[in-house]
Length: 93
Image (cartoon, rainbow, N blue to C red; front, top):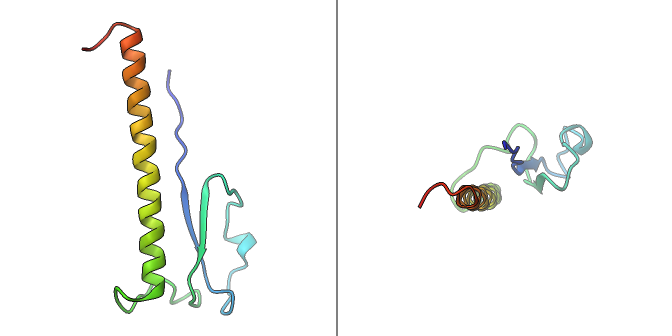
């Protein structure tokens, strides 16, 4: 049986100080699927980092690593479920 897998959405808001896009209009508004954080930049510069020591870069890097761990955990869970189903059906080793 096919199963839909949900992925975590990475959402980085622009700064609370330099607000250009309202949070409610730039979000899916789902804590179940969305990881939210702020980067202290205006909307135009929030993806322009000065280097590896930049706070915005580190927030992005850490949040991306969090999402990658989530994907890996879901992949492992699905693999275990598939192996279990194959074993129950008497297929495989």
